[in-house]
Image 1 (cartoon, one colour):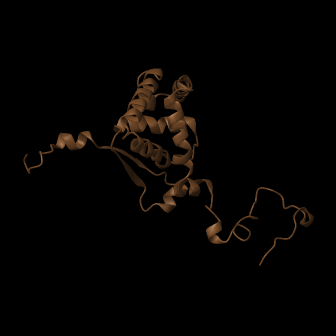
Image 2 (image 1 turned 120 degrees about the horizontal axis):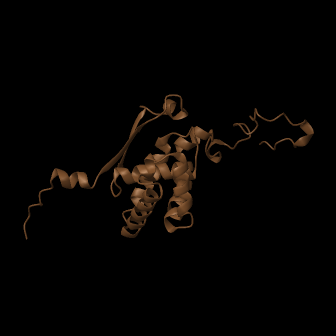
Image 3 (image 1 turned 45 degrees about the horizontal axis):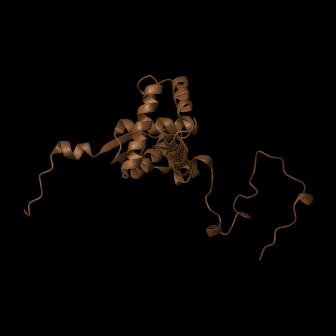
Length: 186
């Protein structure tokens, strides 16, 4: 048994690492929050192409035209972590291959109609369920999504909503005073 570690080549290092890279749109809420408009996401188990396909799939499943791609990239990050399990990795690889095939070769580069047809063709499959289920937490349970959608976050740590925006609806007419009882305040 030798004390020396086997040499790792550059090819070995790069084989286990992929990056998704993008920019945050200039006018988005995220551009105001982020220290820079450029973002990068390291993937350990998925290739960059697989990550890009998962991001595109998430955009078809939960389309928000103004939600920045950086938020959708969290889906790829979370699924990449789950792909440490060989069974999940195989499921994702097979599902991505099926998406590419159904879209005519490259799902991420396909037009919107081809993407929608490809997604519908996989509805009900375990791959579809895995990605769809992960979308819910990856896309909506993070600070970037909260900022985008205007959700102020949990209120209990800040004393509740009574004096923190509970009554700041500007898109509804003001109700009459008799519509609600006076709040109980300590």
